Structure formats: C-alpha cells, structure tokens
Image 1: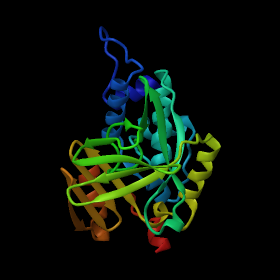
Image 2 (image 1 turned 180 degrees about the vertical axis):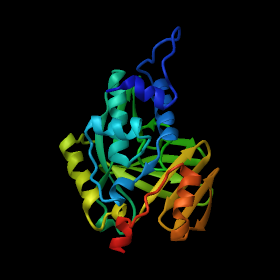
Image 3 (image 1 turned 135 degrees about the horizontal axis):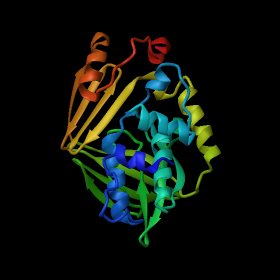
Length: 264
C-alpha cells in the first residue's frame, strides 16, 4: 500500500523527529476518525454506470489520487490495508443493514473486527454520515457517544446489533456475526450491491460526509443535516442538485442522466 500517501491524504503525515505510529488503540482511533472526516461516502461511480473495483491499486487511485470516496466495501477494504501496514490485523465481517422489511435484509455491509490491546474493537469507516466516527469495543452492552449520536452494541443470539440514538430516536443500523469472510465473499456482496436493480445504491444517488458534530446527507431529492444529533431536511430539485453537491461536498456532478433516473 502507498501508506505515506494515505497518511498525507488524511492529515496524519509522518514528520521527522516524531515517533512512528504504534499498533495501539490510540492510533486506531486517530486513523478511523481522520479517514471518516477526509473521505466522502458516495455512489457516483455506480450512478454513472461504472463498476466497483476492490483492487487496492484501484482504490488508491480513486481515494488518494482523484480525491473521491465510495461505499462500505471500498472504504473498509482501504482502511484494512492501512491497518495491515501498521501490523494491526482486522477480520472482515459482513452485515445486514436493518432497513425495510426483515425478509429483504441481506449481507450488503462490510465491517472490521479488530483485536487490539487485549480487547476486540468494531471498526467501520464505511456506513456513511450516520456511522461510527471512532471504533468502539465489540462487547455486549457497549455504548459510545460520538458526534451527537450514542452508539450501542447488543448481542441477540448469534448476531451483534449496532444501534444509534440521535436527539429524537433510537434506531437499529445493522446486524452482523463473528464469522470472518474471505475477500471473495466480499466480492460477491459488492457485485450484488452495485449491480442489482433493487439495490438502494442503484435506486438513489447519495453523497455523505461527517465533520465533528455535523453530518450531511444528499440522497437524490433530499438534503439532510444533523447537528449535535438534531435533524433538519430540505427538498432538492433536480436542477439544484449540482449546486448542492458542489456547495456541501465540493463535488462536481456530471450532467447525467443517472442510473436512479433511468430506473425510476
């Protein structure tokens, strides 16, 4: 991995005279938070008819050279590669986002299980604006306030369930199990998520970011903003979408039409 380029991009460049990064929880927290605040969560490649590659060279080109972002499989694959450079091992797990009727949930989300400093941590830089800013202990009943939200983990049979509480409500985000997945398992999930006509990533365009206590989400015709866990929303007409993307995320949208418009 081009680790120095990655550190430069997330604002953690090594400087002469300072100690090297260590394989400890402080480093994991710092890398996790810096990655989250640096890279956008977005599906523009899918929405412009492209395919999603999880090859490390392609991810580095997209994230480090082109200043782009991506979705969970891209983010967490790149983050796991960065952790390996520090000697931090991470197990790849797949989860089900708890959105819509339960019979339609499927393993379309990737997270990382990180044993470190005598504990096990949940790391996930790829759930978008509403996801974890920092890793949290992978333990039943664990709770972690972060950026206006309180995240909680609970165990239900073989499943871990991550929930988040904002200023108004407590919502389950996703569930996952402890069985490690191979990269081919991840490739299968990535293919389904990026190509199936019923995938939310084909049915809507999204760009998301988080910075401190503010989280901003553009999803097709709606701009949502959380400040200290409090939500405000505004409609976005199609002819304003490019202006909103540029103002809120620094993204120049192509003119379209996008996949979600053709499928809608």
